[in-house]
Amino acid sequence: MSGPPLVERLRAQARHCQRAGSPLTAAILSGAADDMAAGGPTAALLDPLEDDPPGTVPALRLAGALHRLVLERRAPALAVHYPSVGGSLGDVWPPARAVIEEQLDTLRELVSRPVQTNEVGRSSALLGGLLHVARETGLPVRLLEIGASGGLNLLFDRYGHEVADAVVLGDPSSPVRLRERWQGTLPPYHSRLETAERAGCDPCPLDPASTEDRLTLTSYVWADQVERFERLRAALQVAAASPVRVEPLPASAFLQRELARPRAGLATVVWHSVVRQYLEPAERERVSTLLAGAGGRASPQAPLAHLSMEPERAGAGSFDFRVSLTSWPGGRTRLLGECEGHGPPLVWR
Ligand SMILES: C[S@@+](CC[C@H](N)C(=O)[O-])C[C@H]1O[C@@H](n2cnc3c(N)ncnc32)[C@H](O)[C@@H]1O
Image (cartoon, rainbow, N blue to C red; front, side, top):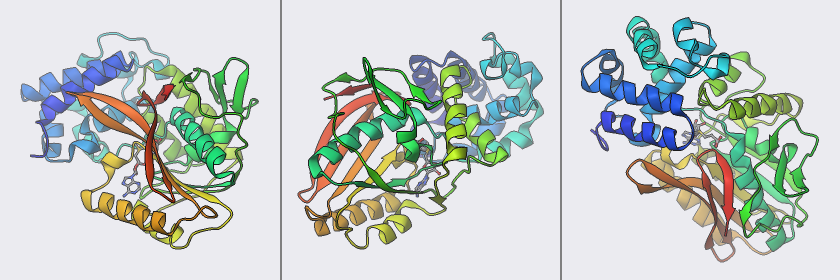
C-alpha cells in the first residue's frame, strides 16, 4: 500500500471538498468511505485502487466517474441531486451506492481513468506570475505549459480577469469572467504583457472541439459548483474560436525538445498547475534536471522562468496552493502568492 489506506484518503478528500464548497462531493466521498469500510459495493469498486499513488486521487476519479454517468443520463435517480443537470442537493449517498452496485463494471473502467480537470480559475495565478516575468525581463513571453489537459489555461488572456475595482485584465468582452478581486500586494498589472508563443503538452490531451473530451472535462468539475461549470462551458466556447495545440507528450519529452536551446529575445516560461502530484518520481526528477540545465544556459537576453501553482500539504487532508516563481539567470525562487485549489481567491505577497 502507498500512503494512508484509501478509506482514510476518501474521508480526507471529503473534508477538503466540504471546506472547498462542494457538499455534494463531500457527501458522496464520505458515504463511499463508510461503504468501503463496511465491505459494500464501493469496496468491490475501489479495493483494486488501494495501491495507486495517493497523488492520482482515486477519490476524485470516483466523483468524476459518477458525475459522468449523470451527465450521460445513465443515472437518473442520482441526477435528481446533481445541480449540474438541474437537480438539487439532497440525500445523495443512497442513489450513488445503488449506481455503484448496478453499474460496477462500467464504473471499474471509468475510475481507472486519470483525473482530467482543466480549471480556468487557475489561469489567474498564471497571469499574475507572467506579469512579474514581463516586468522583470521586459521581453515578450514564450509560454510552455506542461500537463495542459485541454489547453484552456494557455488561453488565459482570452478571459476577463477582474483583478481590482475597474481593472479587467485579459479580454473584457470574454464570456469567461473571473470576478474575484486579487488580494494582497498585487502583481504589476500595469506591465505590458505580450505572449509571443504558447504551446502545451499532456500525455492524454483533451480536445475542446470533441464532444467526448468536453464530457470528460465537465465530469471532473464538482457537480454542485455551478459557477465553475458555467466558467468551463464559456472557456470551451473560447477554445473553439482560438484552438491551441496540446501535444500528446509527457512533460520531460516536451521540455527536452523545447528547452534544448535558449531563445533570444523571448522570456521562456514553463508553467504548470496541479500537475506535480501526477508525475512519477522519475519523471519529476527528469523535469527538475531539464529545468536546472536550461536555467544554467539562460541569459538576460534569453531568460527562463518556472512558474507553478501546486498544493503544499498543510495538515491532514488540508492543502495550501502556492504560486511560485523561479527565474534564471540566477535561479532565485520566490513565493508569489497563495490560492485555493481551483484558483480564486488569490492572495499575493
Ligand atoms: C489535475 S490535471 C490539471 C490540468 C491543468 N494543469 C489544470 O490545472 O487545469 C493534471 C494533468 O496532468 C497530466 N499529466 C499526468 N502525467 C503527466 C506527465 N508526465 N507530463 C505532463 N502532464 C502529465 C494529466 O494528464 C492531467 O491532464
